[in-house]
Each structure stands twice: as structure tokens, then as C-alpha cells.
Image (tube, rainbow, N blue to C red; front, side):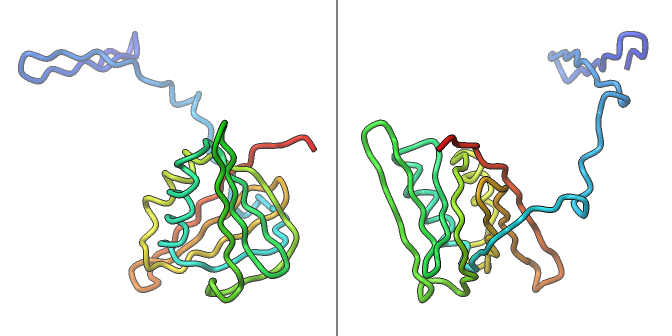
Length: 158
């Protein structure tokens, strides 16, 4: 390591790498999750397999998907240049539904990355608001661990 130039020199066999290092003072701390207060109007509990299903279905037609919560259902829609898809999950299709009126647009690429890490049999707690980050949480290792993904929406003009 060259402290003057902040470069790390690595040699492996015939390969030689020179990598620039970040100044630790330029790295900011992530926000404290307890300070983030989002106004979720409702949500649903669904299986990881159901999350994967709507992500895969919408991935065929678009780069973004809309997730909407209504009194009796959770609705997922995606509109591409030519094609569109919609899925509706009624309360009977879900493990639980906390009804409310909410709708937001999210990046499909980011949701795809999140859904890959969710076990198919996990009970996913999805919380939603209008133009509010979506929250996807689940437990693993028999409840000894938990994960919560939070994804900011794309702001739309209506």
C-alpha cells in the first residue's frame, strides 16, 4: 500500500493490480433506520414465491412496476413500450392484508435484486404508501434473523 498516493498494489502470479483507495473521511454513515419515518397506509403479507412471481412477470414487459394497495386487493402492473401486464392478489390470495389506498412506481431491477434473496417459503411483510419507499421484510433461521429491504419510489407527476 502506498499511503502517499492512496493506492493498493496487488500481485498474483503474472497479474499486477493497482487500485485507488477511498479516503475514509469521504465515506458517510448510513442513516439511522430509527430516524426514518415513512407513512405507510397499509400492507400485505405474502410468500417470497409470490413476490418472485410478480417480479418475473413484470420483468418481461417493462423496467418499472406499479404496486397499488386497495381496500380488497394488492395490484401489480407494468407497462412497456408495447406490452403490459397486471396481477391482482385478493385478500384470500394473501396471508394477510392491511387495506389502504396507496400506489407507487418502483425500479424493477432493484426489486429483482431484492427478490432473489427472499426464500420462496418466507412470509414477506410488504408495507406501502403513496410515493413512499416500499418495505419488504422477512425472517430467516427460524426467526433468529430478519431482513428489511427499503426501496425508494420513482416520483410521478399526475
